Length: 451
Ligand code: SF4
Ligand code: SF4
Image (cartoon, rainbow, N blue to C red; front, side, top):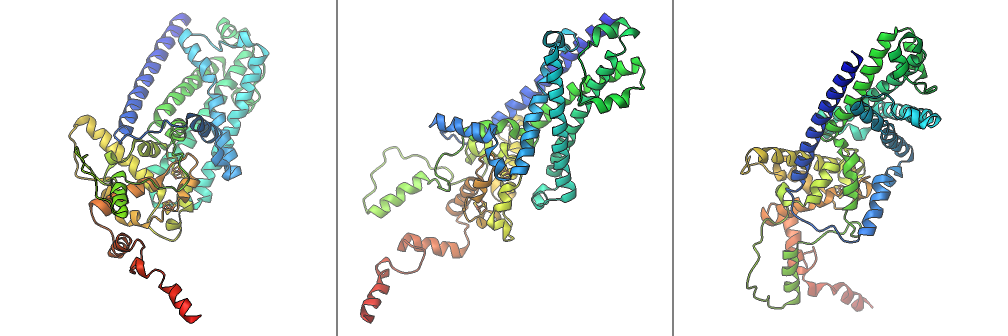
C-alpha cells in the first residue's frame, strides 16, 4: 500500500512538473515574440561595462538603496525568496525519487543549520511583505494611488505579497508537522523510516505548538498537504510571475545589461533628419542617392515602430512609480505619468502579440499613439530625464515619449501652433526667437553707442 502511494505521488509529481514546464515554456516564447515585434537596435558594445551594470543594478539592487530602508526590505524579500527556494531542489528530488528529506542523512548537522537558516530568512520575508502590504493598503503612500494603479495593477501588487506570505506559512507548517512526527517514531514503521531525526527547526517552533495535539495520521496528512501546496505554490508563482509586473525578477538582468550607455539625458537623432539638417546648414548640394532608402514612419506610432529594448523595458517595469514621483510634469498636475507610459506600452504589446498569433494580418485600427497614450501626455514631457535617473532597473520612459512625439511632429504635423512657430523660427533663424540671425548682436551695438 505504501509503495503504491509513493508511486502514485511520483506520477502525480511528474505530471504536475511536466504541465508547469509546458506552460512556462509557452509563455516565455510568447514574451520573446512580443519583444521581437520591436525594431532592431545594437546593444552589444562595451560588454564589460554592461556586465558590471547588470551585477550592480540588477543583482546588487544598487539603485534601490537611494531609499535605504525600503531598499533593504526589498533585498530581504528578493534574496530571502531565492534562498528559501534552494529547498526546492530537495523537494524536486524527493518528488522524483519518492524519498523524504533526501539530503538530511548526507549533511547531518549542517542540514539542520541550513533549514534553520532558511526558516529565519522565511520570517524576514514575511515581515518585509507585511510591511509592504501595510504601506500599500493602510499608509497608502501617494505613488501607489495614481489612476494607473487602480484595478488589476493594485490587485497584482497585493496578490504577490499575500502569495509569498502564504508560501512561507506552508513551509513552516511542513517543517513543524515533520518535527512532531520525528517524535512519534514508536507508533509506526512508516513514521520511523520517513521522518528522520533532523534536530529542532526553530523558525517553525510556534507552529509545532499549534499542531502538537493532532493525531499521527492527521499530522502525516498535514505534512503531505503542506508539501504539495508548497510545491504547487512555487510552480504557480513561477507561472503567475510571467503574467505580472514581477517579471522584473528575471528581466531586470537582461534589461540592465542592454541598457543605454550614452551619457544621461542625451537624445538620439533621427538619422535621416540629421543628414538633411547637416546639408542645409553646410549649404552644400545634397549628393544624388542612387538607391534611396525608403523612409518609413518618423518616430513611433505603434509598438512595431519602437525598438525591442523599449519593449523589454515595458516588460521589466516594476510599476514602483519612482519615475512618476520625480516627474516635474506629473508633480505640477499634468496628465503625464512615465509609469503609465510603460504600462500602456506593455498592454498594447500584449494585445498585438496575442492577436497576431491568431491572425498575422491583425489590425484593430488602434495605435499606441492616441489610443493608449494621448497627445496631452506626450506634450507634457520636459525631457528632463529625471524618470530614467530614478528607475531602479534602468528603464527609459523618455525614449518612448520622444519617439511618439517625433511621430506626432513629423508624420502627423500635429503639434500645437505655438510649438510650430518655435520650430519654424529654429529652422529659419537657427534660434527659437523671431529675429533674424544677422540682428543677433544688435544689443552690443547699442551698448557701443551709449559709451
Ligand atoms: S523626462 Fe519627461 S517623463 Fe521623464 S521625468 Fe522628465 S518630464 Fe517626466
Ligand atoms: S519605469 Fe522604472 S521607476 Fe518607473 S515604474 Fe517602472 S520600474 Fe518604476
